[in-house]
Length: 182
Image 1 (cartoon, one colour):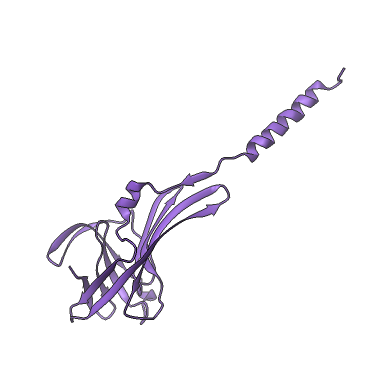
Image 2 (cartoon, helix red, strand yellow; image 1 turned 120 degrees about the vertical axis):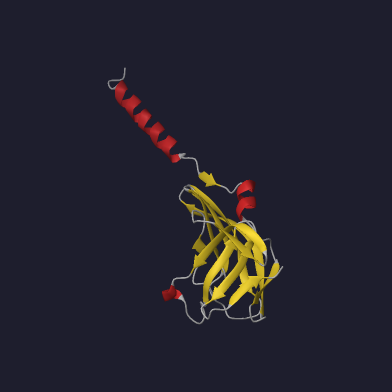
C-alpha cells in the first residue's frame, strides 16, 4: 500500500492548477459596428478640400482604413485608423487622421491634421455648437495646439472637428482660417 496518499493528491492538485493557469483565455476588445459608425467619419481614399479666407484651396485625402490589434500578453486591443494627408505637398509632417482604439478601459478616439503638432484624444472633451459655412453643427470639438509645439511645419493652431462630419475648419499660426468646402 501507499505510505503517503495525501502527497500524491497534493502533487496532482498542483499539476492541475498549473495546467489551468497555463490555459488562460485571451481577451479580445473588438470594435463593434455601432462604435465604428459612431466615430469613423472617413472612408478609404476620400478627397476633400479646405479653402482659406484668402481663397487658397488646400486639398486633402484620406488613406485606407487600417485595422489591426495591439497585443500585450493575452490581451488584444483592436484599432481602426484612417490617415489624412495633404495632397498638394511632398513635405512629410506628422500623420493626421482619425484613430479609434478599443481598449480594455473603453474607446479612445484621437484626431489630427497634418501640420498639427499631434493627434489629440477627443472623447471625453466638451462638445460645442458651431456654425460653419452657414450650417450648425451640434457636436464640434475645438482642439487648440500647445503654443510651444507650433512652428513653420506644425503651423495649425486650432482644429474644429465634428464627431458626425469630420474636420470642418482650422486656423494656422498666421491667423488664416480654412473651412471645408461644401
